[in-house]
View: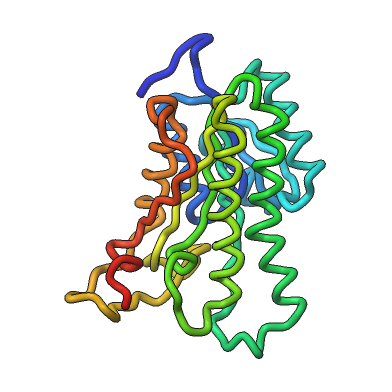
Length: 244
C-alpha cells in the first residue's frame, strides 16, 4: 500500500522499542504511512526514530495524561490520526499464584492493562469524531487455562475484555478496536515470550515470531478492514485451539 499527499494515513506506535513494537513500526513505515513512535527508553527510541526517519516522543504509557496529550498533539500537528497501536507490555514469571506479590500484580497490571486502557481512552477522546483503528496486544494464555500463568492470563484477559467493550461502545462512531493474542514466540526478548507447549496437539508446532504478530497488527490497522472490530485474533499456530 502506498499513501501520498493529503491522503497519507497517520499512525502512532506505543511501545515502539520492543521486539513487537519495532517490527510493527518498520512494517508500517514500509506502507508509506506517516508514523509517530513512542516509548520510555529514549536511547532505543532515538535510534529507531533515526533509522525510520520519523518523529518520536518519550512518554509513560501508563499515564493517562501523557498518552492523551501525545495523541492530541499528533492530530493537531499532522491534521489527522488514523490509528494507534499499543505494544507496551511485560511478562511475569510463570509461578504459582501464591508466590505472586502485590508488587508483581501492580507492576504487570500497569504495564499491560493500564497502558492499554490509557490508549483506548485517549483514542476515544481524540478519534471518536473522525474514526480510526486501535490495536492492542493480548496473549493466547488469556484464551486458555495454563498452570502458573494466573497473573499473565488475568492482565491479558483484561486487555481482551477491554477490546470487546470499547469496540461495542464506539462502533457507531467508526472507531474500531481489536487485539491480537500471540502464542509462544521464538525470541528470548519477546514481550510475550513463552516456552512452546505441544500438550493436546497432535504435532509440535514451531513458535511464532515478532514479524508474524506485526503483520497481523498492520493488517488490522488498515482502513480496508473497516468491518472488523471487537475481535481477539489468536496468533498461535493452534496453541489455544489444541489445548485440552
